[in-house]
Image: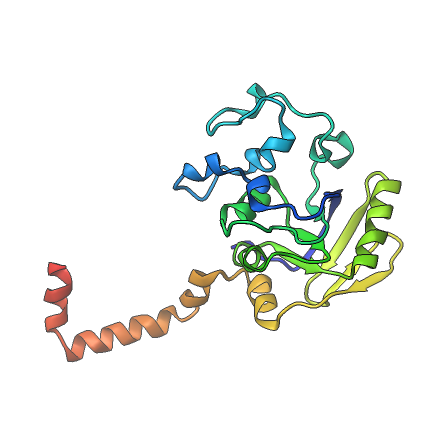
Length: 218
């Protein structure tokens, strides 16, 4: 999993409440058993006018919706998503944070998130940040007023730095922070103990050599 330490990026405003996971990545794209390739279909029903979108159709064969925020040239390359209440509600599909990350987003700022989506973000290298609604309103006003508006997110210090230098503090669970800073997903956490695991397996095999034959038969 990609580490998250300090990230500076362009902010894109998703000015809608209750954005659900089917809007983030529609159900027809969940057929893939791979964990890659979902970025082009992020917000598919909103990004494109030729509907319904189907897996495997190249972006250059689609008809973009010029009114959708992520299709505006001023937000091209955005890596921080600013959102409203209850972002990521709906079904628990992990494909939603996959699609957001593969599009290029590293962090999402909102007043609240759906619980399962919130947890899935941390497991996939995305940083979801909860801020008071009045603070989020202020950030929306800044983004709309100033093209090219960027924020710097310092996870170690748990602050968002605005262009003028003002800092906004945010809370994050200590264990989740540790995992993001180190780039540890669940498998990565286990592999930190690789030497101990190998030593245990060697010791167990030495004391119970018959296990080698049992494992080979299996």
